[in-house]
Image (cartoon, rainbow, N blue to C red; front, side, top):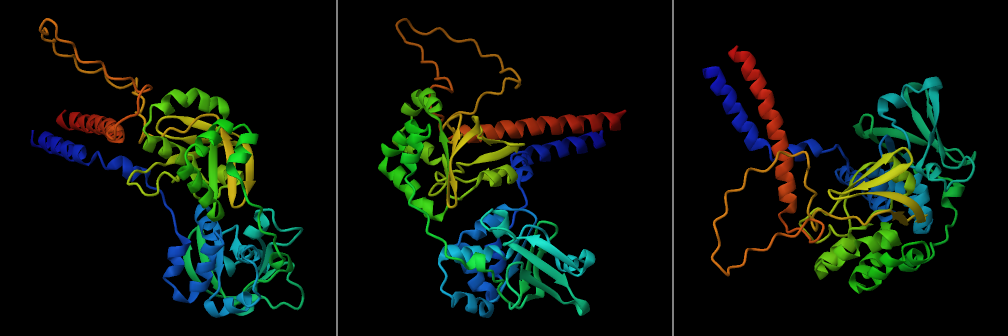
Length: 410
């Protein structure tokens, strides 16, 4: 009996912890290149320009990557060239290799050398062999790096030390000089101004564009985000038309949040979306304590956006040119912060309802609650969803422990 009581006590502890377990299981391993370099003041200039050129975000979204960092003194000759920000971005792209090179691997290169593709090459902006970096392991442990199109008069950069290694996702190593390349340093014309609503209207998203135009504050938020990087998932006209009854039932604040929910303040090309799955924050996240996020998933070439309410699929591309991308999706994205989560039909049947007392003659019965598709949910929707998830976990835990108890008793 004592053993049985001990097991039941464990069940009680599991019930208490149930609410926190789903969030723990959902946690994923990530890194932040800006924070990593912030611990090393000697790379402050390099770190600053990774952010200014929007490369920091690209690094953080990728896996299996090597960053060739240079200290402040090594950055000085590059800055003295007074390159435009776009040209500087291409030069720094040479310092981001699309493979993992830790210190050990660098000193054990097959044949003593390797050719690595940089982000400059991987993005398709580098012509020919530009954007490839030659790595050579010399005698006495010396390792050098040089861009393939650097020219015979250019001295290679040398490996200094390993700064941070997270096998086999991220490696940050220091080299003693900036990698140079004529193609990377070539002038880059500034991108033409992007008129989001005009593009949407011409490419099957006129209804959504009209909703943006009807709310100047929301439209301004989208436009102000373009330069820093923006991805918009624009519902097609048919999807917006079908959704309008729900949209009209939202408050003014709810309508603004729903529109902002379709914008992500980071540039994602279609290739990035196909290779980097996970949760993303949205323009609706900023300035609120609520998450307003959804999950990007892909199955081969098909990319879907999954909220707690709907799953939408990317159908076509309106524009995909750094720093802005606009994709047409087949459904309006509905956040659980605004709409009720659909009832799980596999859930246990509700407890029997107590017999109603007769109402006095002439007294009206209370109105029936609106269905989930007819009205926005209150703020308890997400809490209810969490409790349902936690409840399922508790049932599984209790069942498991009960089985153990049965074995122990018999």
